[in-house]
Image (cartoon, rainbow, N blue to C red):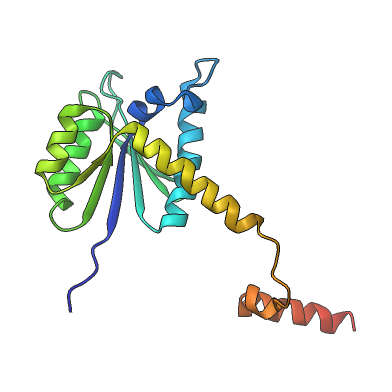
Length: 173
């Protein structure tokens, strides 16, 4: 039986931030812009069930070393000195592009061509933005729905939570 391919979404973080007005912090604070993007990507990853990797260039930062961290489940990569987000993503595509489902979000035409040649699919910054906004709407729609008449608490909560509630009820009975 063939295993299901894992799906990855690599994002050129600064490319997306520069393309999307919502992420450009009016004060010019790039950290705020990064945090806004990561927060939305975290929701997107949880909702879609895919692995999201956002890559930020540090190639012009003297002495910078590659740094990878998990932020709300999203893998956040800061490249090392002299390495662009594009070159980092290209290396990852070389490793996994033929074995897993890989999408790359960037509006950089050169990396888009590389993505396609390595077996991945590409999204422009605007396509990603559209997808993120629609996902956010879907999430809101699902969480804003009033509970259906006749819905039982046993259908909503998991067994561990139900057991805790039952123990609390028993203590106060």
